[in-house]
Length: 429
Image (cartoon, rainbow, N blue to C red; front, side):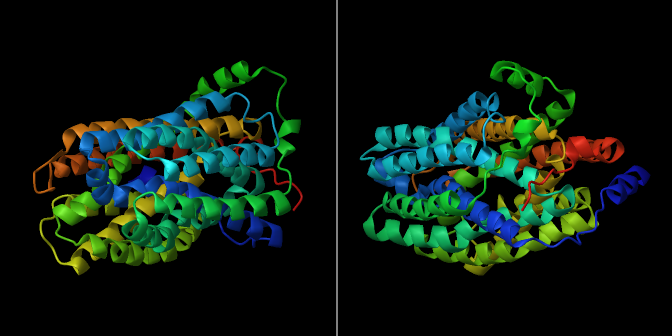
């Protein structure tokens, strides 16, 4: 207990600095960008109850559809890690965001399961790098004392996709078919891309710090750094549990909990509104009270609510919404605080490479989790899922492991933090 108090006390940081006008723009445009990335990925989960019968596929094939995106993103992240710190981050962001838009368009045009599978792989190749470049930009432009708030605002993209994206997408899919939402994402992406081209300044201060070494040597140096390895392992375990539950949540809500498919937009709308309000508050709490303390709270909430959720039977709609809201609070508390805390691990010259590998590991761990979940869960003739509770037990186990790992990282950062290694070096704003 003494160690816990010491670690959490040392991780406190007053959140007194205010955002400049340009910093507000950066946060806003990266939040919208994350919204499109998250919506594109999350879209398959609520569409699962509609897409599986439409394409005549089962849980195993659906799990492969989800994991193909993850594996592609993971592969791209590894390939990009060597040169991620050798270019202006704005230019790198635009190149891969363009590829992401093209892949999403292919998803909307896919006529069958095989073509959709191929299109998801193309989309994943670019999406994984886009996310890593975004978080590298955050780490470059914002000091550690502000990153909790920034992560809280940017990570509300998950909630915004629930509040706005998923209900609209579900309505479009119900009226014009499962592929209609992908065209909506393309339209939003084009607007975000124009804003980035027009107003985002070059992000190239890291180029002055980068040593003269080949991309391969840079990649090897990053993956072999003991300090970074702790972050990589933690990231992998953070990703496993959530990827197991998410792809099958809509099918579980419809066929096990008894919620009508037409009510799913309301579930995502209400829970998303609460999550959108909670995200910035969690970010502020991370900066003010300590990132590990908020992460600990999130772990307790996640374990409690996931055990309740995965054991639910036929329940009223209000009960499902209440449980989902509390589960989202736990998940967001872990996600925001961990992202802000571990952003202090890489040195400025290694941030792009570190973030690319981290993004890659998130996707690879999620891909493995989705495939494993597809084999654990089976489907009855009625559509109900069997062994869904086993996925909850896996999430509990990974949550306990990450709690220990994040505690060690928090103690290490507070004991060895140096401005050159963890402090942001903002470019003139």
